[in-house]
Length: 359
Image 1 (cartoon, rainbow, N blue to C red):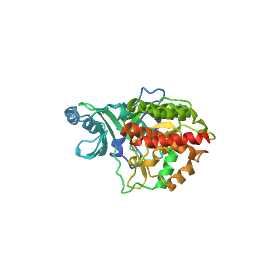
Image 2: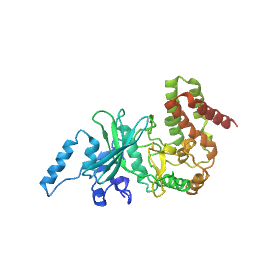
Image 3: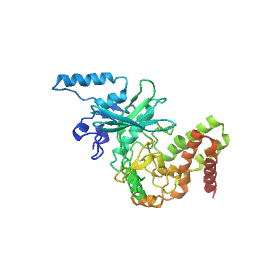
Image 4: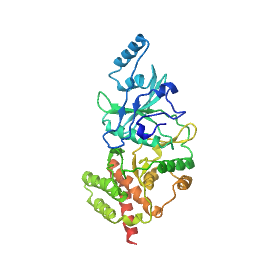
């Protein structure tokens, strides 16, 4: 497997979408920017020469015929397939549709959005590649992001066959902790690009201090959106009070910028056919590892999960006091996404934290 500095993709044994020889020649690359956020996703095309002019001409005619379909064009060219044997719908959400493309070189997983440009999928691809490079937990390897000719965008990635269960909680906790331990940023807290949490923009400006980052780009940003969209000045003002007073909640904690999945709920957790945990659909950034549990109210993490996690990443002083603070970000986001049904939960957390800080 290559490193981030190589700016290339290599496939892990046992998860190749095609033969080993073909996979090694794949030209789709997801590059993690090393110096700036301007380089987000690149495609490198290797020289193509054929000893057989007829075969080369045939390949060119196939690509030309598919030029109005960038998905098929990539699969038949860079994906090293010569034939797409079938497609099937895997599901449709409020933002994306998902399909499986079966070919003579293996299967590919494709997500499309008819109304959102490629920036959203570029952020997802960079997050997947960053997690993949930790060599810790199983994630689908991204291959290609692009625009659809009729509007919208797509991402092509490795197809992972899921098993019949969601996997072992002990293994999930351990693997997640291994990812957090393996990937630290020397840039501080943030990420290479802005991405999304659901359909809400997630601001990832690099920041040296975690409390400042979480205050401004997580809680503060969500509160600002709520004020603008719903005119809810009460929760905005209470939330700002919490931001100003929350520093003591971090007393004694050792905080490092760990790579986070960022949106770890049950719908983004599965297991492969070997029973190994798989995580997908990330909203990655580098942050305090405890922030990863912010969606635990929708993830079903049990005692086995936390025990195995803390064996690798020891629990920090004040963990219990900060737990609700990290839930708050996601409750505020759900308020923004789905409306006032989540307001009372968010306000209760704010008021409980303020009361705790008075004690």
